[in-house]
Amino acid sequence: MPTETPCFEATHLTRVFGHGRKRKIAVDGATFTIGEREIVSIVGESGCGKTVLAKMLLRLETPSSGELRFRGQPIDAARDPRDHWRVVQAVFQDPYGAFNQFFTIRSQLKDAFRLFPVPPSTQDQDELVDRALLAVNIRPPDIEGKYPFELSGGQMQRMLLARIFILRPQVLIADEPTSMVDACSRAGILEYLLKLKQELSMTIVFVTHDIGLAYYISDRIFILHEGKIVESGTPDAVTQHPTSPVTRQLLADIPSMHRAWIQRTPHT
Image 1 (tube, rainbow, N blue to C red):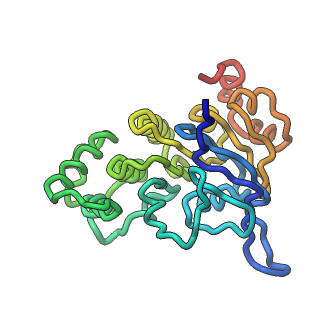
Image 2: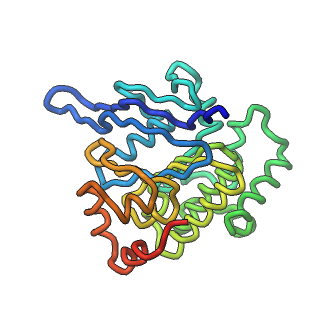
């Protein structure tokens, strides 16, 4: 049987900023594949290059060298990025930064239809927005006429996920989507991500500093340090048999109770 083409395939992928003494290597020779319908977590400390790597997958940053392919084809900066964004979407760390504070939530959710080749009718748009809100446990009347600053951080993250339900992309880049919300909202957001994966057969790239969350949600984990992938594997292999001191430090940084739970609970 033929082997399925990877969703993403990177070979010696590198991104450099600045020149001379100010030169900074954000991603350094990363080589990896991400399969279709897989959840892969990119885990590392702040400044390790994980967000830059995620932006290259999203086509918001251009590689300095190396090769990045999407479904077998080079990610070409000469092509219209909207073609890529119809298929690959993102949920970012700061939900307020993703919305204009001067326009209502509903009007901005309806802006998502601009990416559709043929936008639905106004009535259909309203129905699709309502359906997306209900999918993330928001009653449509609860956000009617409201602006982003009137909602909590957890509610705003759910607005980003509602937008994903509207667009129904095939790939989602989730960059620290739980870092600005409380523990209750964090669990809900992870639940919605898994719901998206199941309903849309979606590929998810989950970017986080928390290896405990990565263990919970992932099929595979990449550990990134100073722009390099220093370890990768299944959640059980990475957390229970780490080979890199970076991984061991990430494990040491999570609460002891959570760490003990990971060690005695095989990933499913």
